[in-house]
Amino acid sequence: MNAARVIAGFAKAQVSAFLGGIVDYSVMILFVQLFHIHYAIGIIAGGIVGAAVNFAINRYWSFYSPKGRYSDPVTVQGMKFIPVCMASIAMKATGTYWLVQAVSLDYRISRLAVDAIISLAFNYQMQKRWVFKKVRSFEKKH
Image (cartoon, rainbow, N blue to C red):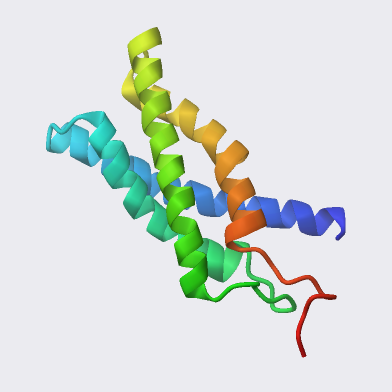
């Protein structure tokens, strides 16, 4: 695989993460600021809504390839995505809570810092290598 395709794939996944993140972050702020619900609950609610957006964009754009095929159907991808999403939300809630408590950062700033780390180190890797894994050309069934 050439470098330009790798970079393009990574960039598309980051656009998807950004769009899902905007939805996620907005729902969190809505829950906390408007409904006065604890930020950890807001993170969970936002994470669920943002994950749905992220899954759809990743499946049909970020990791989509007209030449390649996914190794799993959408239902299996969805079942793989759920534990990845749950782990991501748990790490975001825990990391944000820890930064707020230990360092006294505002929850909104803490959340952005934690999101950046989780998105690159965990979400992208799990989605590319497991959830939206492609069938290699020599594995394709004819």
